[in-house]
Image (tube, rainbow, N blue to C red; front, side):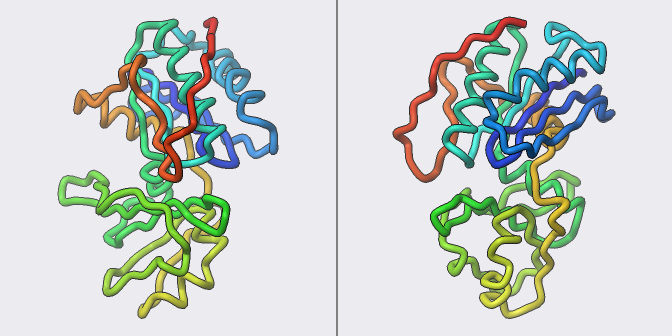
Length: 230
């Protein structure tokens, strides 16, 4: 199965192509440019360098939130364009779930924290089950870092929100916690692809006419129309 995946939920943009479990192309762009300026060119570059045409993809996957309003709109519009242009299926992935994969398989609870601006973070917790798959514990939330508390769990935090508010988070915990290094704070599109394939096999796919991003902070942002020519 060929999967094209991308992320535009945060400060970076990311694009990956996977053939089953094999990563063919995987890049993170942290140039400071608007995602609308880099996403389609990088998708075209990924296809050109891998020798795989858009029409040959079996599945598309992208993060649908939470995250930047503008970034999520760009990602959603691009996804809709790809779906309509090719007729191929697509999966929408939690940005926090994709971020949590940066921790690697662990027996600890994983806290994924994205910097949401305005002194807040997007937050979600995950745990690997006996089946070897990562499962979410509770719901996505937006909150003040001072409210991030954990009673007894052995926990590992990941994401730019965890790095930015590391001192506050440590003060609120009664036990030692681990925070993933800065080199692993950004979402990899290859992680989005892995989670997308899991959703594909569970038949949890997007409807191009109905899906919208998950904003958490507000529901008043509207998706702009976008055209894509493969």
